[in-house]
Length: 238
Image (cartoon, rainbow, N blue to C red; front, top):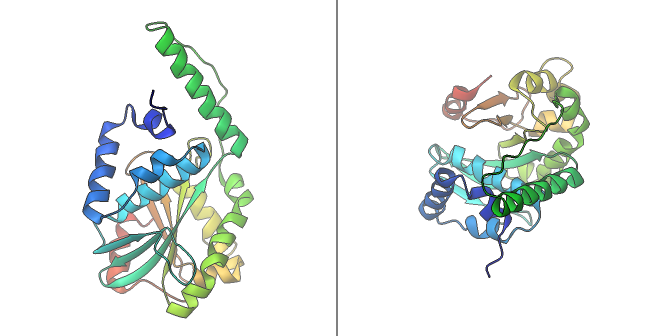
């Protein structure tokens, strides 16, 4: 009997997204679904899915997208070519604590088994509302610093613009106002962290709901997008 994977469970009721990913990997000659199918850890599964969603966002914009391509001993999530300019892109998935994610996935599996064994029996669950705003992101700022530090040498050696795509989960939901407060202004992270302010070209926020993207350019960045690419990304500028 075939073992049901996290990917099988996730895509069971999402045929449109599954077809979109299949089409994307064929068109760009990537191996994405195979990686998702092999993932046995829920946290890693949703992190990989966030990387793929970022690739889907850039797909219609870029002449080339390379996923996990080796570059000076590192493997950035994406190396993009946008109107002739090469751009590094890393995805930062904002997870709840790992134990909470795993417990949530296991709970979903229990519910799925119950529904299979008890078809037609309604399930009612109650939980308190969870609101996580700027405070969560401030607590996770070290993750942004790690993303910058990891590619600092490559950025300066190759003079590459570098975009970080922040992907929150429903439990760690932040909106563009939260991220703007955190990044911009005199007390924002672009201004208060020297390395981050110098090496990060911009931050792209993937909203939890499909199609909601917001781009935050960094005026202090040493390696900027071309004027043409600034206009491209300006469509999602907050």
